[in-house]
Image (cartoon, rainbow, N blue to C red; front, side, top):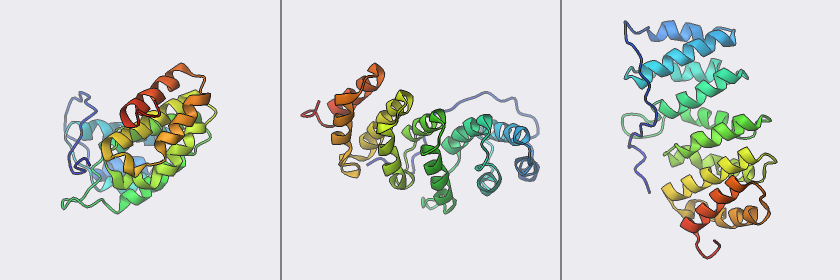
Length: 206
């Protein structure tokens, strides 16, 4: 099983530094009722964090004032924020706030918009903390039968990523579910992903 305390950098964006804003200044924007202001603050926050600034106190502000937004730009920026935010305490334990983040991610996995579902599944492919992924497994597997191929395709890769990182024992039903999908799937990209997953995780079914 992967070391959950390892840091995985999957985002790198250049940001020209001046004097960085304070947590209070960013929090004020995040708490604004206008989605455009929230998005502006969230984008600035992500850029600052990617370039080494640390704003741990803003996690609860994001959960309280930003997560409920339905704005498309805010949703896209949130997937970046969830990827880069520090998820553990100094002792390696998962922060209590991440339980609330799990609830937000579960809601997005069941969202009516297929692109929000798909982008959330793509985010989870990069998540290397099983304590975050474990309560989301059922919602991930449900997306294998979603009506949109974009969702199914990303669901397959999410399942594959979880099994590859943490072992087939954490998702023992996954090979059978993927095999059933493969038998009826019409989208070529989804079929390719499903076959790749079985080839690497259960060759007898492949």
